Length: 466
Ligand SMILES: Cc1cc2nc3c(=O)[nH]c(=O)nc-3n(C[C@H](O)[C@H](O)[C@H](O)COP(=O)(O)OP(=O)(O)OC[C@H]3O[C@@H](n4cnc5c(N)ncnc54)[C@H](O)[C@@H]3O)c2cc1C
Image 1 (cartoon, rainbow, N blue to C red):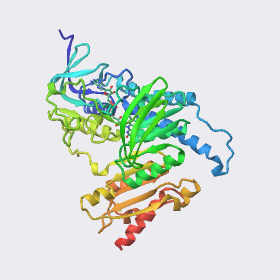
Image 2 (image 1 turned 90 degrees about the horizontal axis):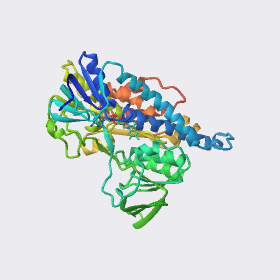
Image 3 (image 1 turned 45 degrees about the vertical axis):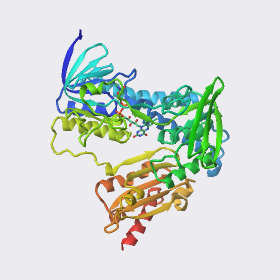
Image 4 (image 1 turned 60 degrees about the horizontal axis):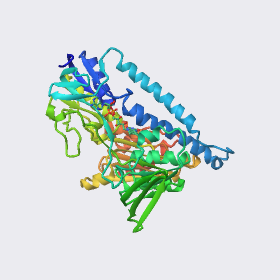
């Protein structure tokens, strides 16, 4: 027997970034909305265990790093060290405030909130844990992602940390072996190293951050090695094992052509995440999955069932929070017939890695244009030849701009360097407005700033166009 049946214009499965923002837009359109979220703590990944806690900790680690190299700046700072208890408390307080705000929004009365997991029983109905049935005219599947455990020999049997555990540390671990070289692996490996852990990072691909250019990855790699992270790239893990004293990882180092064993107190599995589709019974709803396991969507976020939408990590193509928000909003607008809407423009893709130096890109990379045989001009300029970065001792990296060769329309930019995640926004407006290098050079650039470095590659491209 089902305890009750309720009907809504929109049922959101998941109240994170994509689900909540779909709900918010639908409510604004005067629709009845149910949000179903089975988490113990409400708030979603970004607030609770993703963007915000990681950036809180990384900021502390960066301040610590600057304090520790005080001599470089003519400062005497005798003993700068991390106080993990205090760091942990600060993070909890900040995250708690963000989460409370989200909970207040969820519980504002604008939506019916169900604290339960849900699964489809047919294309128009989901069932909650207490057997309540929710019927919807429209649905959005926004259930996010979870840490994946790839078939590395021994990994499933060995106790490991995920990013959740690293973000929740209240003491400095003696040593950590990090498996993976993606964004989460790199950001948190540097955090661990900076708070005083001995860190070994083992990456399968020839360079870390493999979704970025080898040149950009090489800069971050160099910075990591200079800071003391033991970093192996181009490896093949043969075996992972653990006992009461810690873990060991045996791998082939294809660069050196030898077998290596590294031992550590803890293992951090940062090999990636996978879409959270388990338990949703998407088959009962007739919703199709891509070969990579994501919910398949069209450019309006509709799944193979036109009245069921998806947004965020569960469908991708990028696990980035501003895209999850935009997908949720787009889905709700499309679902309820809002006029003059446009699909998301992934050619403006904005990506930031919060390592130090940061790595940020927008639009097309030179390698993509070359692969597409699309003509382009590119120019770059290094931070170690720029006044503001030299005085800040922020010498790693460069700015690279790619532009269309006839009129100089900017097609993309890549920045590796201090505050690259902020600087890349010098390009986001101009890219969206289809600006040229000449347009950007008409803008004022204050001296001395990090941002004015951008004028050098722009000038070079402008001169080449003539
Ligand atoms: C360590 C880390 C750092 C990150 N840093 C950044 C960053 O700096 N910048 C950035 O852009 N992105 C970052 N990300 C990625 C970003 O957090 C995600 O892309 C984004 O939060 C995904 O939002 P979502 O709405 O898809 O999923 P979520 O926010 O995870 O929401 C999904 C919700 O669905 C609920 N749910 C799941 N299954 C069910 C079910 N069956 N029934 C009911 N409810 C269910 C869950 O409880 C959850 O609340 C980071 C991720 C990690 C792990």
